[in-house]
Image 1 (spheres, rainbow, N blue to C red):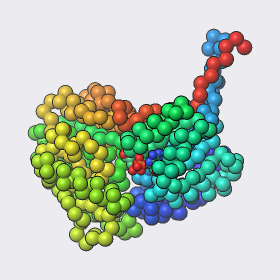
Image 2 (image 1 turned 180 degrees about the vertical axis):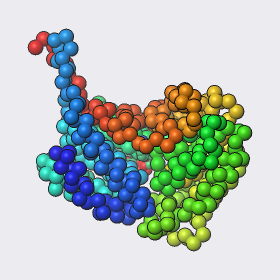
Image 3 (image 1 turned 45 degrees about the vertical axis):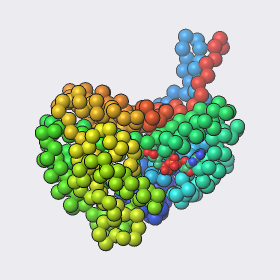
Image 4 (image 1 turned 45 degrees about the horizontal axis):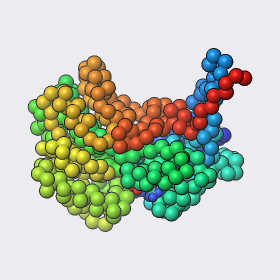
Length: 405
Ligand code: NAD
């Protein structure tokens, strides 16, 4: 069934790309390379996992079985409308769990396309259920429903808390994929221009509306000036513009609320004494209509500043300097979040040491491509549980032991 979904998903490629661009505002190229592709990869990966996944094992005469958890309620945000729905649905289907999906009210159309894809793939009736609506009504209904066995949520921490409280009334298992304030540590043995390129491309990705965004760039103090010079040069070539235009690297933010939120944080950075090195308040020239923002870089940021502690969810980089590696690691971990981390360097032993020392669920070294079989999820207030690959499937399973058969 999942292989049939992959086939049907591929047939709808152009519509998926256009739909995500229409509802989210990301440039078409990014919609294809990232959004269309990520959705696809989760289904491909789930099918692959099922070739080897052990649902039953024997241990000293006792049978250990992994059985479907039952009906899963899936509640998803707007920033990756195909990725977050697909990772949950693919894992749930692989585990044999029927689902009720409530996508974000800001991006309902990608989910409607998925419903059509599942119908074409002959997913049996009742296995996939889509309910569009607001969080307070539909989301609340899902988390408190006695016939739903598990809620998998991706979104903000505050909503995650509400869902957990609601789910507690019927002792439901809850998985949470929440926000982040991820560090990128640049080691002093790496080419600073190349490092600046990686830092910029991470921070502008999806107009900064990414939970794993490397929003805190931790740079050797001695290389700060060279790093900022390189960042300025790179950003001067990057175009913000309408998503349908070939040259646009960044589209607008999703909504007025999101625009106000990002502007509020830029103002806060200025008020708290960080140095505004690139970008700043207001819209880029010539883009007065739409929720466009300027990619913004703050330097001389102290990790205790609001812009270094709270999730901005926009293309805003905070540059923090360090003198020793221990100090860099301490800064990286000085956050309530632990979703992702990035280490840029040459020496593999130092890279491993730093990667192992960051308390976060997904660490990326240098320019590594994503690994869809690797678990994805957060430490600390970034969440509970893991998605993607076999670990993702485990979330939708109950474990039973049969003793004495
Ligand atoms: P949000 O919490 O406002 O909304 C997420 C979903 O929850 C939406 O579908 C919304 O309708 C629903 N919802 C709202 N109130 C609810 C309630 N009381 N009960 C049940 N459901 C409710 O988040 P958002 O603004 O859509 O997304 C941005 C947030 O998501 C950011 O904090 C971001 O970091 C996080 N996020 C995390 C990951 C991850 O994998 N960890 C991925 C993407 C986004």
